[in-house]
Length: 273
Image 1 (cartoon, rainbow, N blue to C red):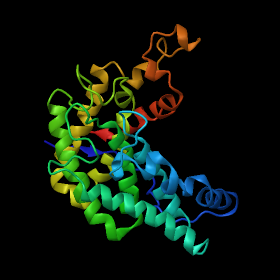
Image 2: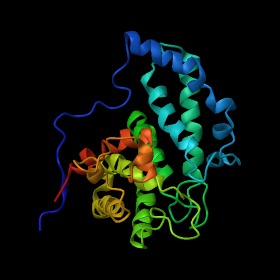
Image 3: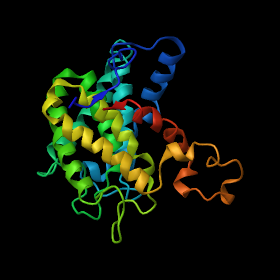
C-alpha cells in the first residue's frame, strides 16, 4: 500500500527571517517592538506571571494567553534585523528564548507541554498556538531546531494516545475543566499547520504514521462534535441573518473562530492518501 503523503506545495516557503521587511511594514514592526507588543513580557501578568512560566495568572481555563504571545513574539523577533536596533532585537529574542527554554525544560515525562497536570485540565487547544511558535522558532534559529523537534515529537506521541482514548483533551467530558465552551474543537484544526510541516521534516520520518493518525483524529473529532467547518461554510448551513437567531454552535459565531475556520478546509485538503 502506498504510504500517505501531503499534497506538495506549489511554492516553497521562505524560512522565517530570510526576508526582511522594508518600508511601511518595517515601520509597523518597529512600532510593535518598541511599544506594547514588545514589552508585554516585562509587565503583563498573563505573560510575566503566566502559569506557563511558573506563575499563577490565567484569564481562562484555556491557558492560551502565553502561547498566543509566544506565537507573536517569535516572528517579530526574527523578522527584525539587528541593524534596526541591537538592544531591541536582542531583547525580543531573549524573551522568546526564555519562554522556549522554560517550556521545554518543564515538559512532563509523558510528553505534555504546559502547566496542566491532570486529565481534567489538559486541553489540546493552547498547544496548537504553542506548536506554531515552536515551529517558527525551529525554522528561524537552527541552533534550537533539534531540541524543539524532539520535544514536539514527544508531545505528538502523547496526543495520539489521548485522542485514541475517546478524544481525551479534545472533546470535553463531564468533569473536564479545560474547555467548557468547546473552543478547542472549533480551532484545533490549527494543530495541523505544525503537523504538516513536521510530517515532511527528516527528523520525523519514523513518526509519520503517528503524525498522520493525529491529524485524522482531529478532523474526525470535529465531525463527531458537529464542529465541522466544511459543513458550516456550505449552502443552506451558512447563517445569513442575526447571530442570535442562528442554531449553529456559539463558538461558530465567534469572529476570530470564523476567520480561522475559513482556513480549515485548505489545511484538510493537503492531506491525501
